[in-house]
Length: 196
Image (cartoon, rainbow, N blue to C red):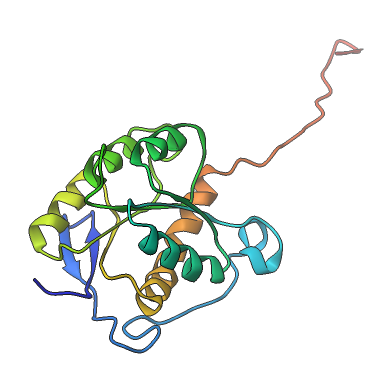
């Protein structure tokens, strides 16, 4: 079992490919960009709409590492220990990325991913699956269930920073698709000299 890799799914080609190794340096293997997402969808530092991340794992330490690192990047992180609660929340709340562990009591990561893909508000959201199982079959099964990104445990700051630098564009694209801005138009109708 190889540790530390990142898997990326290409839906148009139906392929799983390994991204370059993250290495031991922060951001190694990925070009890091920290540019705001433009007007409507800027991150927390710009004071507009903050991207929301849901992370689900039954391991408190993993949740704390994720919340600390990703929160420091300017994202709002909702961390849950119970996959059943997560399944309920994805039906009523909108998230910009959902991160799930594979092995959890009650609903495992595959079942939770399927529920996310069947939810009204989160069906198109990017899903990150992380696990200690870094084999191609687990990756394929995750991508078949609807996973967008795959990250091998143990989670670390460099891995998470690199992944979120790569995933930000996908999250912003999903937010743009989902966000509806209010529009109000006054309409004047005239017919035969009468206004309606």
